[in-house]
Length: 536
Image (cartoon, rainbow, N blue to C red; front, side, top):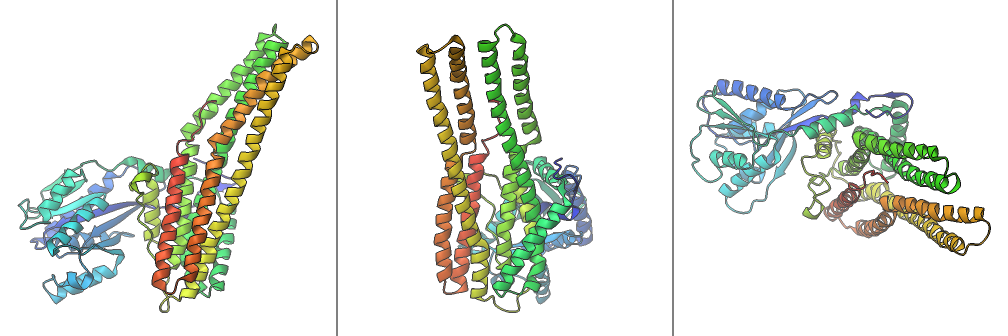
C-alpha cells in the first residue's frame, strides 16, 4: 500500500463503491408474488457472494430495468430496499408511448414513481416495430449488466423479444444468470457463465486502500474548490447551489491526482536510476580493465549495481508503479472533466473506447466501474430555471477548455525542450566519442593518455545510450506533438463554443469537446502502457 507524505492516513470518505449492475427480465404477469419476493432476496444474497472479499470498498448495488410490469418492477423494488442501492432505467420507447402499454392507471402511477427514483434514464432509438424496440431493450440490459435475474416459467416466448429470447441471448453471451422459476419460486438455478471477474474489484479495493497525506489532500482540495467557486461566481452561476456538486467531484479528483503524481514520480525516478546504474556499471568495468587490471575485485561493484537494477525493476513491476500511474491519471482526468459536465447538467460520454483505441481499457475495467460509481452518486444541483447560455459558456470555456489549452501548450513546450536538450547531449557525447577514439588510434601522448582516451571512448557511448533511452522511453517528442495538436483542436472548439447561438448548439460542442479529451486520454494510455521499466 502506497504511503504518500510523512503523516499519512486513509480517507474513508473517498472510498469508491464497487458497483454491481443487476439486470432483470421476466414475465409481466406473475402469480405468488410473496414467494417470488423471497426468491429475489435469495438471488441478491447470491450476487453479493460472487464478489471477492474487499477490505476498504463498500458494495453498491444497481438494478438496471425497463420497468415493465411484473418482473422488472418486482426486482427493482427489492433491490431499492437495500441501503444506497440505485435504479437505472433503459426505456425501449419514449416515455409517453411506452406508458400506453400499461394496463391500468395504477400501473402507470407505479411506473412514474419508480422512474422518479432513477439515477439515470436512457431512451433507446425508436426505429423499427414495438416488438423490435422491446427486444433491443432486453439485449441492452444483458449487455450492460454484471448479473441477470430472470423470472421465467421456462416456456417459449409468445413473440419476438420475449423472456426466453433474452435468457438465451444472456446464456450465449456467457452473462452470469440467476433463473427464478416463475411458477415454482423455490426452484432457483444459477448459471455462472463468465462469472464476475475478481480483478476489477481487487484493483478498486487497492485504489481505495492507498494512503495519502491528509494535510496535503485538504490543502489541495481547498485550493481547487476556491478556484472553481471563483470561476462560478465570475460566470454568475449560483455558487451556493453548486458547492455540494463541486466539492463531491473534486474530492475524488484531488485524491486521484495526488496518487497519480506520486506513482509517476516513483516510476520516473526508478527509470532514471535503472539507466544511471547501468551506465555506472559500464564505467566501473572500463575503469577496472583499463586502469587497474590487477584488481578484478573492483568488478564486485559492477555486480552490485546490476543486481540493484534488477531489484528496482522487480520492485517496480511488483508494486505496479507504472500501471498505477497511468490508471490513476486516467481516472483523475475523467473526474476533472466530469465536474464541468455536472455543472452543465449534462451526462458524460459512455466509457467505451473506439475500436482503434481498444488497448486503452475495456468497459469492465476497474477505472470504468469507479468512475460510473462516483458519477451515479453525485449530488445534483437544482437550477432555478433554464440555464443561461452566457453563464454556462463562461464557466466551461474559461475554467475548463482554456485551462486545458494552457496545460497542453505548457506540456508541448516543456517536452519539446527536454527532447532537444537530451538529443543535443547525445549528439555531443557521440561527437566526443569519435574524437577520443581518433586520438586513441593516432597514438597521441603518453600511455596514460591513451588509456584515458580508451576509457572515454567506452563510457561516452554508454552515457549517451542511457540519455537516449530515457528520452525515448518518456516519448518526449511524441507527447510534445500530441499536446501541440490537442491544444490546436481545443482552440478550434473553444472558438466555436464562443460563437454558439443557443444552448443546444453549445451543448453539442461541449459533448464533442468532452469526447475529444477522452479520446486523447485513451490514446495517451495506449502509448504509455507499453513503457514499463525494463533492465537496461
